[in-house]
Length: 281
Image (cartoon, rainbow, N blue to C red; front, top):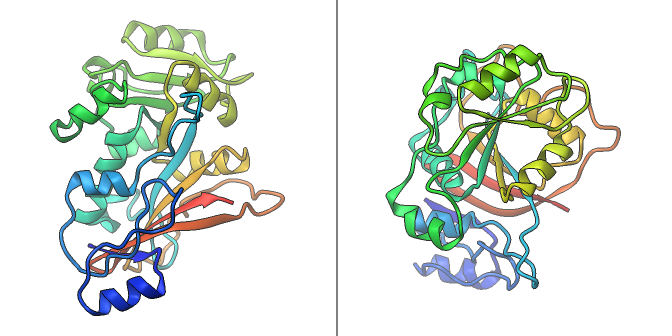
């Protein structure tokens, strides 16, 4: 893996001479200068590259919602209904690191069903840093669902390291809410009617001390988050593949009235896969 951005004249010149890492701009957490040497990055090095913003001067950490998605060159977020076919070993390493940094992983019910979601696991490599940050052994999985049409006998609900959360609306079916609670999930109401208000969901999670948030989609959920203006950061893997067909984009649903502008924070590359980070301008 090698870092392509940020880059300066100095890093370009030193990279050509075989230099390694050169410091980048101050005040940009988790971002260093370009490292043009192609080498294997360790998990903790990736964690530094993808660090969440620091807490404020008062020590209070504001909620930060980032998305992690993969897309083909022709815009497909899935192949045959799953992301695995367009992913790679490096993409899965980044996927695992982003989870290891998060307090909670927010995911749509359809993605839970299609991808066969299991509880997040504890990673020995991150045990010390999570404990030092006041985090649990693994992130909670927070499932966004209106109808709660989920199989509550699955390990996601019966055997998580930390209780799975259900994000739903106040008008959700009472019998399904009761079934979720009976299975051990914590039901969080974050909207009127049956739907979930993404901004309200972020606040509800933050009220539980879960401020470092990661969403893995799917496209429908990410589209709702984008439309609500609740996304702070997008980590997008560009897969060097073409699929054609009618696969979904990374974000679906109605368009926003005004496009939301994001700025590039960093860009990594391995085996033709590009790993970009964009933050809301």
